[in-house]
Length: 341
Image 1 (cartoon, one colour):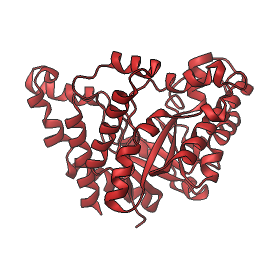
Image 2: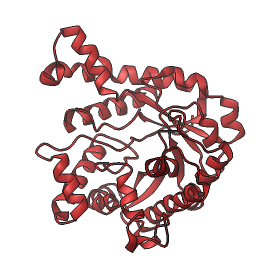
Image 3: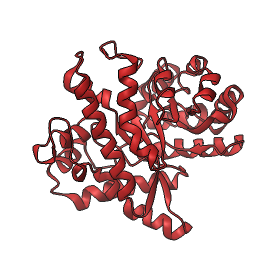
């Protein structure tokens, strides 16, 4: 059996007392970096403490604005949608250095992390919608590539194990006007530096209907599938195509669709569990248990064997009610993976 790597997608509940409004102001003005960096670093530490092997930096920003605000900054631009390399920084990676340094001192080695970057198509759709300007798509892809390259080369106390290109619209959004070959070209541009620098390159999809695009992109080697909430998604994947293109899967083994999970408990108890978090606990104790995680992993492994490389929650945990509950879900995943092994 190849090593199964436990990672997670990125978003996380805010700490108690921290609001979205404060975070948005802190990110935009950079006037409170000391407190902002502390919030980011402490949240990242919680992921390490929950035994995530390859944690993502905490995603507290809007996935599009996080990158477009830099790409569209005239002082950071070499032209429309072409970011300067010096500006292609993810500030969260600077913020997590203290937790990474602590890990390095305690374990004698650097922590491998996952860096999620919004993909070129997603950024394009945000800016242009249902149009088709291939040159602009490729410019955005080049900017994404620069963010990935900068993340890998500027890391100090950690190393970038995985670059994940987030493209939730592929397979879902009917507005996409580009051909398959145009999308493959853009994804190749976006992932070329990360691939050359030795990182695994994942594409994070919310639907695997067009997973073949990623499989046929030579610089992408991992395809994320949200298969915990949607086990039928695995039926759409052809193991032979994975083998022929030397692609691997990142399989979701814990549900993160917390509103649907809460609806099950609301119906069971005829109440609103968002106002009664004691009953919310059943998501952790009865629904998304280590045993459930192990069974999902066993199912995926029975179908794809060593083509399963990464496992973790389906998507981010930003909508969960508390950081403590999100951490407990991650603990359940860690235990479920260990039991399976």
